[in-house]
Structure formats: C-alpha cells, structure tokens
Amino acid sequence: MRPTYVAFAAFALGLCLPAQAAKIKAAKQTKPRELWVAFTSNVVGRIYFCGTCPHTFGAMAHKAAMFARWRKELGGSLLVLDAGNCLNFGGGPKAPPVMLRAMDLCKYAAANVGDNEAAFGPQVMRSAARGTNVQWLSCNVRLASGKALFPASTVVNAGGLRVAVIGVLDREALRDGFSPSMDLRVEDGLECVMQEAKRLRGKYDVLIILAHAPPERLIEYARAVPQAALVAGGSTVRPAPEPQMVGSTLVFQPVVYGVARVRLMPKGGRYIAAERKRVPVYSNAPTDPDVVRIVEDFQRHGG
Image (cartoon, rainbow, N blue to C red):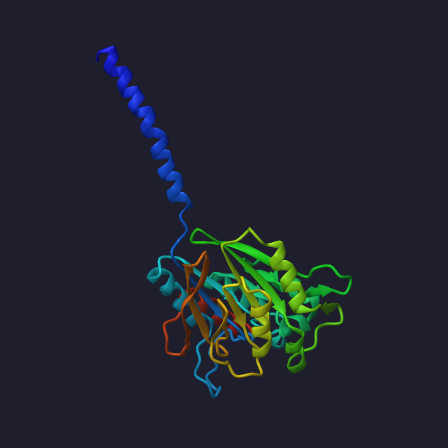
C-alpha cells in the first residue's frame, strides 16, 4: 500500500473511533424504558397454604413461581419488595428463618420493618435476618440508644436503573397493631423519610417508599415526598383501598397475602406508574419446587 493511502486510512480511522466510542457511551447511558415492581404487605409469616383456613390464598411457594414467571415474561426487570409485616415470630423461633429462606428464593431485594417485626426486638430480628440476601430497612425504628436497627434505605440496580428504597414504620400503625419492643423506639416517620429522601438526592433514578402505615398516612408520605414514584404499604387492620395518584406518586396497597404489581415508565424527567394491578395468589397456582422442599422439611420437623 502506498504511503499516501496508509496516511489517509489512519486519518479516517482516527475520525471514526471517537464517533464510535461516543455511540457506545451514549448507548450505555440510555436508561431502560420501564421497570416492573412487585410487592407484598402483611404476609404475617404465611409460609405455606393453610388447608383449614377460610381463605384460599396461596403462600410463598406460589409467590416464588409467580415471580419467576414474571421475570421470564418481563425480561428480568422485576424488583420484588415487602412493605412490612412479612414475618411472624409468634410461631416459634424456627419459622422466621424458613420464611427468610423462602424470601431469598423469591429474590426479594428489600423488606420493611413492620409492627410485627418490631414487637420482637432487635436481637431476635437481627438474628433472623443474619445470613440472608434480603436487605431489611427502617429509617425510623431505632435502638433505645438511638442507633439504627437497619439501614434507612438501599439503592438497588434493577435492569440498569438505580432504584432507591426507603423503609418506614408509621406510629399510627402501632395503634392497631403490636407495640414495639422496649429495646426499640419509633421516631416520627414523616420527618425521617423526608430527611432520607433529601440525603439520597442525585443518587437514584427511581424512588420507592415502603411504608407500614394506615391508608390515610400513606397519602401523607406521598405528599411529603412528591419525588417518589411509589408509596407501597398498608396496615393489617384495614381493607386495601383503591390505588390512587397523589400528584405523580402512586399510593398502592396489596390485599393480605396477595401481590401488587406496578409498571413504571419515564415521563417528564421521572418515572411514574403506567400500569398497576392487584394479583391474587391462589392455592391451586403453580409452586416453586425449592420453596416447597424447605417448607415440607420445616413441617416434618415440627413446624
């Protein structure tokens, strides 16, 4: 090849490489068009289906199979969360670890401390949570000394999006539920959530609040933190109200033992709910064999 041609080729390549690099960088910076969030609330330790109970809801093995199917259908962009009262320590010390193993198999990313969890105190809660992948959260449940029981929030990578999740136990939920352990104190939830949302500013693409609170208080959290895409929660003693939009924030509560699913889409520089529905989990639905296995083992050994 003549020197002139070699020089021209090198010059042309030099022009193309930066352009190509810019295209690659732009592709990497492009945010996903949607995020799916599935969440539960007030599962209260329902590890397996109760054949003698008046309801016909399924349990964790059914939820695990449902989440696995959704991940295949939705391309893996599913974030699974719990808004509070997932555990039930009243069934004995062996039950919570089994529930947490089932939550791991369901691939829960985070769970909020509810009044049920707070009632049994820090040592029991921390012991149960040790060795699991579920990140427990609470911005306002603290040790009597003032130190945090669990992190106030977490930032999860979900399909390329930075999703910040804040957990809170509202004091109003304690009026109808369990009182917290004497080793714990519950600070003002609204103030703590606003402080944590301010601290997280610039560190997320989507903000979600997991609130164990009565319906009217869920609305207050949406008003206090309007940048949140979703306030997910509920309290055990109230029927689930209809989901509603507070500004651009969806306030949504699943039914007891059920699942709520939300599709978040970008609009106006933020992510908002484009689709939402409650999904019943029936006892005749498909089950996950790994969850069935640990539940059956638990039942055989005195669960």
